[in-house]
Length: 269
Image (cartoon, rainbow, N blue to C red; front, side, top):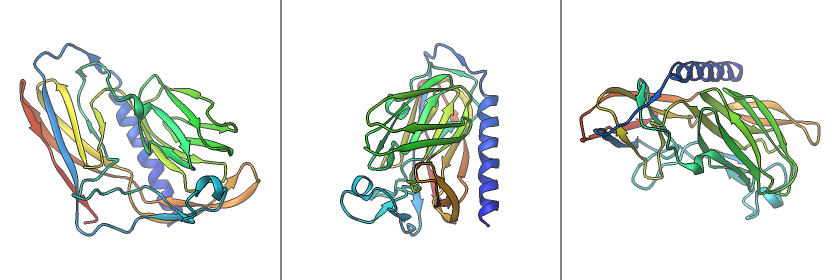
């Protein structure tokens, strides 16, 4: 089961990389008569129990409150049912405004053995800046559209890498902090967003036309565990394996200087 889940995840990574790569011919144009697209991602039905994982290393740094377990941050549902950390994007747009994605999604911190932010959006051919606020060794391992294994032995030192290939990148720690996980989308155009705590998203200056809009969530299930390797202690450790990501797709028409609304309802069914 675990091997199959891992295979499906790699297939998903490859397909998203291919899809994003196919859109790399995006052209920047003047959008004087564009419309907006906004909406929400809402959860339907009972909310699954939060996925937790035991703190098995550096508890004084990773677990300063003494909870002994940390959230894996896979599903965040707000008080009104909004689903945070969902990536929403236009699938078939070939021309539009210049890149204007939020800067905070291009900077990664490792704080109390968590990745902040949990979901990153980095324009293709631009830098991801990374640092660690923790006084312990972290090693960021990436696979997917980018493959790196980057050590962070000292706090607050910036390490940057250019993300040249559009697609999905999975991040995890090879320094024994096996619960650390994050996802990064390297994107070829600016019509990408990450939903906030109320599940909201918005695109501005969208050229008039009909598009496919996609909502992508990393998935909220735990498929099991796998053997991993702690590069510092040279010991085998158990890492959580997650179920594959989920996507939903709708059609949306944008008219000149007009707002459009697209709402998604997601859940276990």
